[in-house]
Image (cartoon, rainbow, N blue to C red; front, side, top):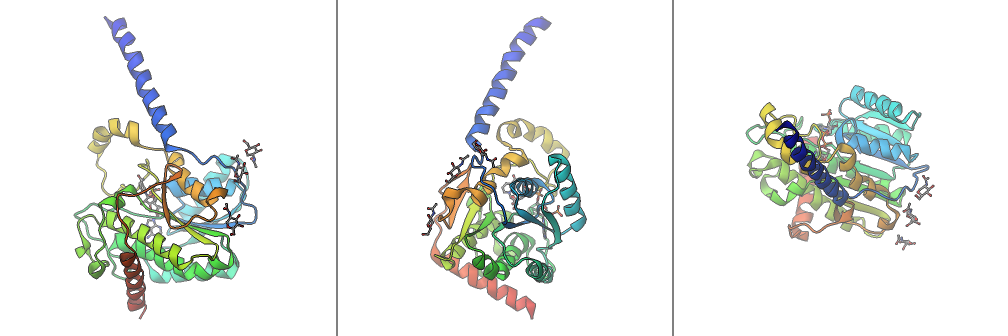
Length: 318
Ligand SMILES: NC(=O)c1ccc[n+]([C@@H]2O[C@H](COP(=O)([O-])OP(=O)(O)OC[C@H]3O[C@@H](n4cnc5c(N)ncnc54)[C@H](OP(=O)(O)O)[C@@H]3O)[C@@H](O)[C@H]2O)c1
Ligand SMILES: *[C@@H]1O[C@H](CO)[C@@H](O)[C@H](O)[C@H]1NC(C)=O
Ligand SMILES: *[C@@H]1O[C@H](CO)[C@@H](O)[C@H](O)[C@H]1NC(C)=O
Ligand SMILES: *[C@@H]1O[C@H](CO)[C@@H](O)[C@H](O)[C@H]1NC(C)=O
């Protein structure tokens, strides 16, 4: 009886693992191992999750990597962890950046520009997601998802734009999400909770519009932009929404669909380093290949989002 059970169970488990392996192959990985000597990269939110893995990989390719994090101690701990894992001293730097504060963004950019004349890679990776019934605002009273995921990165990027242009060929990677397909852009209520139901998805849609508009504005300057959907990744992103029973309910699905942070970092690393992407700009990527969203992006929304973002920032700088 017991042995029958085992005889049935073993093939079932093998089949499950086989399916998982097949899925993993479809996610792709960054094959090109091109080195990044003399390159400087900034990664926001690099102390955990996907950003941590990207920082580790770029530094191991010999880039100088700035971990731009709201908690410098966590960034320093991440650096120690990376150097311990790789058994090597790398060119990693921890610098403070709170994307929920326009003042902190300005301070960060000024610190960077004092020390680094060139920035070749900017990875806008930091992000947060709150449960739908919660309202959070940034220091400057913007709705938090919009304020951090889009507007904070928008401000950071535009302040660094001259440095990035001067450093061409340079790349800006904007980490979005497949959930952007559920988002909407309401130009008149962007900064408030009135912008729609799925605030996280809205901010991730704004990320892609920003990527496209920036590509257009930086055309032929050697500065290229790439938007990335990393896939569903096991990180602490949903720490504010997750309850203990979710682990039980989601576990079977997670087994097939969830990537490790390392797997989730592959498309970002691909966009940051792959030589053949050199002149591609304004496109969306997932599974280490370009991909077409179901959303029809229109130029008008892209340019209005840019203008409104500038307007909102100026209105709060006073
Ligand atoms: N995980 C997924 O399934 C998934 C799917 C699609 C897209 N993404 C995107 O992937 C990116 C990385 O997320 P993750 O999954 O790696 O989650 P994570 O482990 O929670 O990392 C998010 C990072 O953003 C930082 N951050 C949050 N608010 C910030 C602020 N105001 N200023 C500066 N940094 C801030 C966090 O810092 P603290 O540690 O201090 O909180 C953390 O370092 C996000 O843009 C997310 O939207 C993730
Ligand atoms: C990386 O890309 C370069 C340029 O396209 C190519 O010459 C090289 O063979 C690639 N390396 C690998 C390991 O794929
Ligand atoms: C990159 O990969 C190629 C092919 O696998 C290998 O020959 C080469 O030594 C690698 N280069 C580096 C810098 O690791
Ligand atoms: C990108 O464009 C530059 C300038 O036109 C050209 O020299 C270079 O070969 C191109 N790179 C790729 C990978 O197509």
